[in-house]
Image 1 (spheres, each protein chain N blue to C red):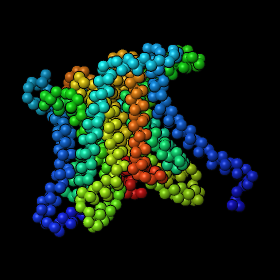
Image 2 (spheres, each protein chain N blue to C red):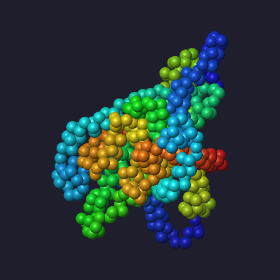
Image 3 (cartoon, one colour):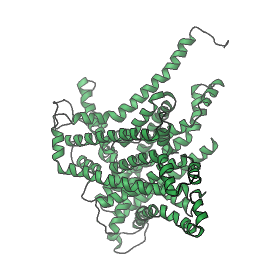
Image 4 (cartoon, each protein chain N blue to C red):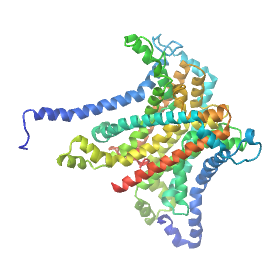
Length: 300
Length: 292
């Protein structure tokens, strides 16, 4: 395995042994230290703050308590927000999957020489600044926005449709377009790995397109779908810029709760508790999606 | 073949059935492209409208919003801050990420699984939560928030992406080539320079552009771990929170979007040249490798 150091071994066994022992530190030392200091440590400090009564309620020093968690969980307003968040994230995810599976199929099997350009445009869509994209939608959807103005000019409607902006619809729409690249590419990758002959075999055996899709295509791309879920569903349910800018009061999501707790009310303890709960949910979801992706890959 | 009921109709139906999926596929692609890029194109179009309200009617062509944006100190500072932070983050991420990718794919050591897991975890934890954790961490340590804290936190979330992309590149190419180079008398440095680097060149190029974009586009972490110095996304956010849509935001956004389009196409050409592979198989491998 240590092929690179074999000749050195032969030349100077002692030096090479220390070198071999030190080598991992040379490569992994700085990156790992950075992750421990500025990823793991902040997470632990945040967990500590979430378990502390806080300066206002408990005075100085660390006062262990679970009240931050119980406060956040039992608050009926937050429960309602959690439900809205679940609804928006799930609908956005489903919309993206419904678009992404056929789109990935078209790119992988039907696009010919357009395959690379289409992929390039998908990457480009992701690289465009998210804030620019959100702003562009806000401009289109507003009360005096382009869509309402255009519809009124044509004469389809008499009054602007208010529900276009500052609504759950707006957040769902913007979120659905924000992560499409990450939904399509894993599914596309899974499709590229399929041997095209299986479709021919299915057809020869008398399967229609629906049977082929359900019994051949979907099982083969299932690992890709789970990777998409892993990459997209978690950011969807923690998103905070889109609901803040196009959501209004009805599109208020958990991310906004965290923002308001931490930055508006300065309640670091409850904000930290809320973040830890969201982190735990993400971890649970990631674990399940990862497991499903693995199991399916082994089977196929 | 004998079982086909009406041989006269079949060719037509057959032709339709063969054409229709292609047509529907084209329509789907067109629809997705319009939804993804249409709004940004409209945004760019209305940055040239001679009206302070961003809507119809079209009042005439002007470039004054670009002049106003250029004269707006906050806007200029925000863009410059983002460019500086993203450049620094890109360089450090590529160096650290490539080191770690080499270590994780080519070396055996205790705790390798744990380190790999830590790298992966960073990519799955939402940026909002990393941002809040960073804010709490720095405030507990009483470190003032600044561009430096933003860059540090960006680096932490970005270099694991480089690890993922470069690892995929390292795993894909055959290690026997490295062994062959050593057997033929190359020393370690020559082996890295003449065997490994050309192989992972495209991965490094892709990783660089993604690292830059991740930092440049990052909103959540910049928002929570930044002080008074705003980055571009934070500037847009704060303007939109305070007021209605503003034409100068259109102008700055158009410039940013145009630069990003040029950067992505430039990277595309560069990677294509590096792979020297007209079939493009390597590029799709590059795109999909990280997700497998």
